[in-house]
Amino acid sequence: MAELPRCPSAGFAHVLRTRARESAASLAFRFVLDDGHAEEITYGELDRRARAVAINILDVTDGRPERALLLYPPGLDYLTALFACFYAGTVAIPAFPPGATRQPRTMSRLMAIIEDAGASLVLTTSPAAPMITDWLADSSVQPVPRVVSTDLADPDAHDLAPRSSGDTLAVLQYTSGSTSLPRGVMLNHDHLISNTADITRSFGLHAGASAVFWLPPYHDMGLIGGLLTPVASGIPATFMSPVTFLRRPLSWMRVVSRYRATHTGGPNFAYDLCVKRVKESDLVDLDLSSVELSFTGAEPVRPDTIERFLKIFEPYGLRPEAIYPCYGLAEATLLVSGGTRLGGWRSVSVAREALELARVARPATAGEPSRRIVGCGAPGPGTRIEIVDPTTGEPVPAGQVGEIWLDSPSVAAGYWRRPSETAETFGALTATGEGPYLRTGDLGFVADGELFVAGRAKDLIVLNGRNYHPVDIEQICETDVAGIRRDCGAAFAVEDDHGAVERLVVVYEVDPGMTEDQHLGIIDGIRRCVSRESSVAPYAIVLIKARTMPKTSSGKVQRWLARRQYLSGELAEVTRWQRLGAAA
Image (cartoon, rainbow, N blue to C red; front, top):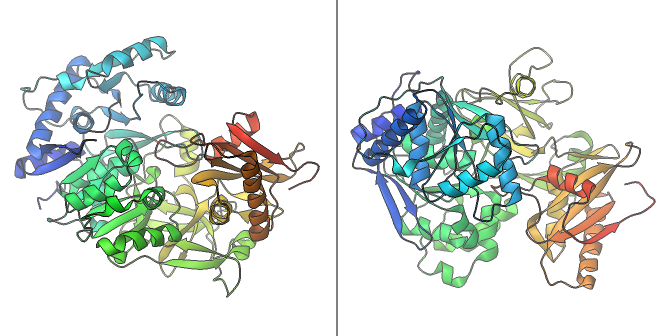
């Protein structure tokens, strides 16, 4: 495997150039189309195309550094434009492209990103350019960015030396907005190189490895893990559209089997979707024996999901020890911690009452209400994790739950044009003055050197002096209540009219065509199981139409937005139950 450039001032374009010079004819990427056919590109061709587009960018900008929004469907054009930005010294801003229907939510997010980033360019393909140009003309964005069709770049453009270095801003990675409005995370080339090296080491990527991904390339997991890490490690990667996966979840496993991939992965919901949609016909001739590692992260990793997935796919060659829970976030580029490759995954069962009352991860005794939490391994070399009381800044003892703070070469430079939020999130100091640390906003604890993530601090529900994690309440509902849509619910707290008491609200999607009696049965089931298992009675339960729960484009439920829509009356309600005249 070719060595990457070791110079700390080399940017990621140098990484591609190294691959192109030493392995020009080797397969870099394969993109599987919806009909099963595939387009392929070698390292040499990817480098040539990226340089051609970079020269085009420099021509239209008179060589000035710019910020460019990348609006492409998943595919080789997007990949080429990304590396072209690296070559040209242009800041890449990956974003979910608008569809033909121009959904208001997507368009408003794009407008907010353009205005926040101050993007002067929109890079896209010639078929999409007229629609994007018309939309920008009709929007309130000022000044209007220039639309550039990168597939029209001169393929015979001359050579170009990379115009970026390690400390050059490479990407504005806008957060998914699962707990707040999206913010632009500033990633330099050194951050990308550092984190892809961590992933290469942690995942055990080697000369004979190959990867398969369906992850959206607009978010950290798909961008850093799915597109940049294969180039950094020099392995071929096969990717497909996330729309293809969502339509036919088992197409993921079929492509893994077809190309004998050694590495793959995705969020918890992806594994769950495969289990829910599996058909016998999808399993014919399936062979997953090549898989060395299948990571799961980006959202709470559920042990029951892993167990159900293995029950179906272990007979087809998937080894249990290949499952690899890990933890990361955009503010740390991507990966923070992971287990020992082929070391297997493990979970601990902690007493739910101790977790709720004192944030202590005490092992549960027999028959005691408990919660299983999956371990996400240990941080790699150079990364330091502290578990800290989020209120006092005091590091907490082992076994106690606190906010996860970290220090790493992969920690981003901050949020774009948000100095106060950058100082608060990226400049945290402990009570004794140690730091600065990145405040992740996640709660967790360390046991036997392994990190266990307990939930989001911002999602935490505090009722009657007890701390409840929304995921616990949602899991109770999804385990005990039939008729609700799994991974399509949100539990959150709202204040009473005096702002003195918080009340529990549970919102869930239901399938169309259900009767009023079925809705009432679901509400009664949620009331009973939540009251029984968590000792708190819901104040309100709202059933909403299928596919209307607010989610990020990567599939995470946006509890904060569900709460806002509940308060404003914007939920697509089917049935609502509310307990009148009583506090939560």
